[in-house]
Image 1 (cartoon, rainbow, N blue to C red):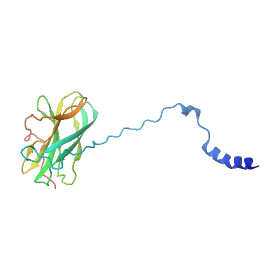
Image 2 (spheres, rainbow, N blue to C red; image 1 turned 45 degrees about the horizontal axis):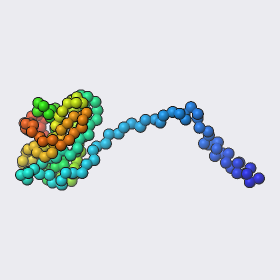
Image 3 (tube, rainbow, N blue to C red; image 1 turned 120 degrees about the vertical axis):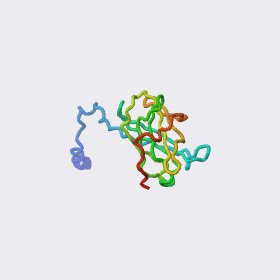
Image 4 (cartoon, rainbow, N blue to C red; image 1 turned 180 degrees about the horizontal axis):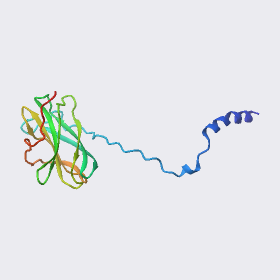
Length: 180
């Protein structure tokens, strides 16, 4: 009698769950769309400077998404921002062979309390194997390049390189000012 009662209690639960559909047993799981995450890095230093003590903008990491001729770059920067008088005002992608500016992402304000920080930009019109340099720029009272640059390609990835490319400080687009 206890078994009959147990089965009577169990039947409604079995009816709710039902039996598995045999046509679904061998099917592959539904693919989950890939999400693009910004690079996570430890800052090179809390207040990056060059050998002479001048504040710099270090490029810590680069993540690239998209396709040939239409890439989005997510660039992580550590910079010695103190406000509009000293802040990283752009990062740029430069052709490693010609030294031509390919893309520049203007940073409209300082990032004093957000170090390191990541900002995305694009489209960057390059081929997967095209060699480029990603470098930062400090704006404000002492406008200059400096700090760690990363070089490489979308295909091979990006590693620290010596930035021996010419200055592009007068090439448009240029910042129109600093918001804060």
